Amino acid sequence: KVEEVNLPGVDGKGVDIIISEWMGYFLLYESMLDTVIWARDKWLAPGGILLPDTATLYLAGIEDAEYKAEKLDFWDDVYGFNMAAIKKLAVCEPLVDVVEPDQVATTVATLQTFDIGTMTKEDAAFTCPFELTATRNDRVHALVAFFDVSFTACHTPVRFSTGPASRPTHWKQTVLYLDSTITLCEGEAVSGSLACAPNPGNPRDLDISLTYEAAGRRGKAAGSLQFKMR
Image 1: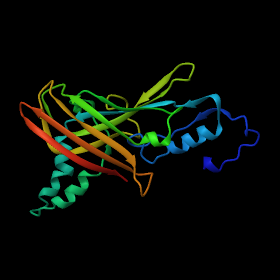
Image 2: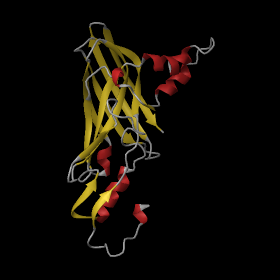
Image 3: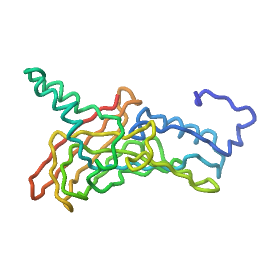
Image 4: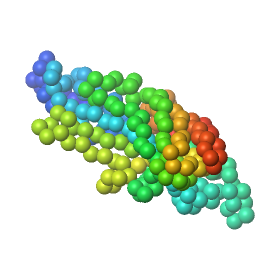
């Protein structure tokens, strides 16, 4: 563990560069960012470089009727048995999977941007409002979260994205299924708030709270959900 590493000859001088791959699902899952921040405060010399040095978390609305029917609505009628109690548990677990670009039915909202060089570990817990505007007439069954990371201190700045429009990575995207379907016409919006924090019992896990509401020509929808990434 980096917290246990001894670097002979570095004490009092620090290191010039820290390179890390700490990103998890939903960017923050597994809380490895805490270790990077610890190493930064312990070892990085004044003017030193962190790679990557910024990360941004995004949110969008998607149409996903086929998968939701197959994996979630299935529990409403299991060979004639109503097992909706299991459905309630299944909805609370975010799905990590690849979302196709044509599933995205809204604009993309920025939830949070992290400056790895200055943030504290407490900054990884946040609450952020959002508004997503429909880019076409469609139904929204879930919200999808993804992230970008940037290496701005390189001679040639580099970034990569885990979004649906980019080449798939092992991080994929994180899908948060809604408890009701939102029907939106182009230009109408769904708004709400998303809160994220490490689980008190196990800081490697994430607790995500979501509230949303929408009111359009084809109906209204609102809800409040608690997700657990375990």
